[in-house]
Amino acid sequence: MPDPAATLDFQITVAGWRRIPRLRAHLQRAAQVTLDHLPKRFRFPVSATVLLTGNAKIRQLNRDFRGLDKATNVLSFPQFTPPELGRLGKGKSVIELGDIALAYQYTVAQARYDHKILINHVTHLVVHGLLHLFGYDHMQDQEAEQMERLEIRILKALGLPDPYAVPQTTTKEKRPRS
Image (cartoon, rainbow, N blue to C red):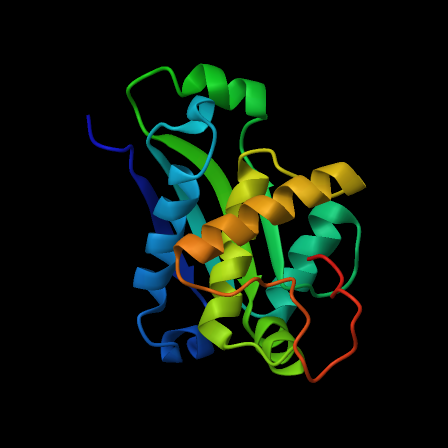
């Protein structure tokens, strides 16, 4: 039996995203590898919408849904709780996980500041966002460690470096979590 598929639907509202070569293909592959690394209870066909937007829209979403009047790099809006997903996944239809939104300006600035390759950073943020759609979180230290280990494994499978490793040109402290 073939592995279940993970598909992403893209909405691009900021032109800068279109200048990143093969962005959709990279993120689509990241979605599939993420699904392939999840526990069996989450291995069923899924889709998610990815809004590639700018700081103003992210700030509005962050304010409206989280009460935080500021831009951020990525936001996730899960449609189901993990127990609901487990039950729904037993059916044969594709499950729409929810939405992920990324801010172009914030993400580009963060990648530059952290000396990261932009496509690698964007890929990490989409993996991070997808894990949130499956119920992973980083509010408690134990949850954060579990989520980070999974992100690192997924990114390694994609041939990408550990996003939490500190570049040699900066301090030895870990970067704050997304």
